[in-house]
Image: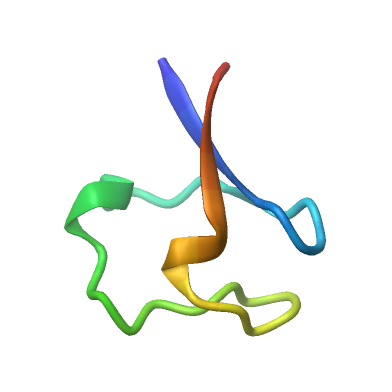
Length: 43
């Protein structure tokens, strides 16, 4: 399973909506950076 981690603050996205289906304007709830600064990692 893949997880997505904010490269700025380390927040791990763990929502019910698949990361790829999040809106393009999704922002990290911790530091506010955009979806493009999240990195896919193996869980």
